[in-house]
Image (tube, rainbow, N blue to C red):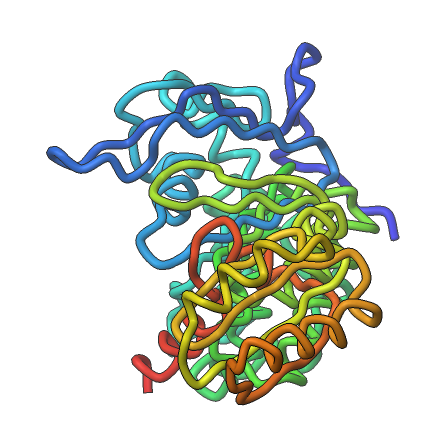
Length: 337
């Protein structure tokens, strides 16, 4: 499906190799440094997943990239333009669907999209054509002519996504686009993100608290912790970096003794302790789980539970931050109830 370019036919200067590029990006609040020397390089057409625990600095980075917050130092170029020197040029070339959708419940979906198009300078006929194209791209259907107050949470997210796309931006920022949605609605939003990226070649900067979302959608993932990028690569490469297999051991006591024991076993690549749980990285889980269980038994260390699985992005997150993002996401959802 061919989508004509309107405002964003000015896309990027010819000398730009990246759609997003930051060098030494810093943001301070008083004596606190929320973002500390961040270097990001996002290629055209890439879906970049941005992960971090609460308070790590990811939302501050997004606010700077979308010109909502000035950097304290360093540089950030978005769509080839400096966010400080040329914020208007940046805003014309980006779309943003932030976590809190700014929707007027007393408007219909079509009225909101029409207003959004006019705010970007599109005339009435072009806006109408663009809305028709977006209704094919984003699953809104006949609901576009209903009042927004009648929409489900998933429908509001999809309408907000359509509004962010009305001017066909070069870059789309999605801030936790599926938080609080049911699994079916999440799946639909995922399909639409893939379609937008595939059909339009649009660069997408995605922050999410769902590791499976980043794993499914992102071409590359960056993890930020305490304001610094601590890991960045393709999801599969990041998962391999923490071991080909992971053995999870839950013990009743003698944790320190078990850690010392595992550190002496040649088959163990690394071991991390988190409360009563040990995460043991090994090259071959099927061959290693038996010797590990035997070593614990011979040392008279009681095992509560032992399981084997391949690494996930949650293991990567745990390795680099000391936290499990899945637990943080669940805590945030409970806090919102």
